[in-house]
Length: 141
Image (cartoon, rainbow, N blue to C red; front, side):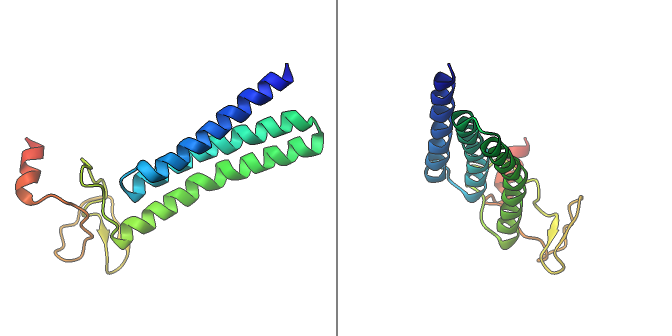
């Protein structure tokens, strides 16, 4: 019975890691790549470590696997957030079919302040938009 569980968990873990690798290739921009790899790879590594803990059936191996899973669950989202934020602030463009930029006009380049409300100081904000003002009016309607 445990061998069936191990095979299922290992297969699912490998599948999620494969999907994360495919997502790295297929996603059109940095932000979507970060999202795909963080979610799929974290789940895949967690499933593989759980299957290893079941396979070895040893307290020391199980405790190490659980600590690694905890470490990955704590560090992957934080690191993905920091990489995405640094990419945005450096001016990495959004995908041209992105519908919405929530941070548009809220980050000041000069003093590196992120505000909750849009500040329309000319030349001070990072603008990732690929739309001109005519296109924006069409989207609002």
